[in-house]
Image 1 (cartoon, helix red, strand yellow):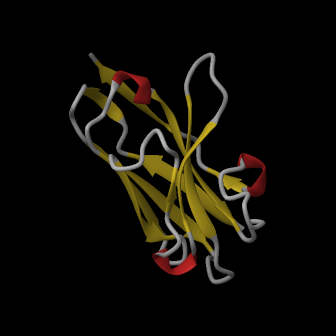
Image 2 (spheres, helix red, strand yellow):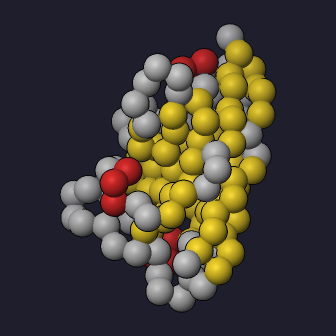
Length: 126
């Protein structure tokens, strides 16, 4: 059992940057895949980025590729999301998630993730 807590959200102008942190507590020795999702009002929850055990296997949604960078490792109890060149449509609540096993080809599916944080709000003004 692990617990995830996000931090680092806030209000930023378009073009600015934020760094989100996900702090993990509990036993991480099983090895987990980590991910960031976001949820904006009136929209479906959306995969943002994922990272495999050991910090490799990074994947990104097309909407953030080239602007966001995921780093860290659930095993090391820290996962980060560096967000650059933010846009108003990045406004959402951002969630850190973890899974002990993700089926191939389904890394972007929220149903694959067992553990979730409470979320941190990111608001980008135009």
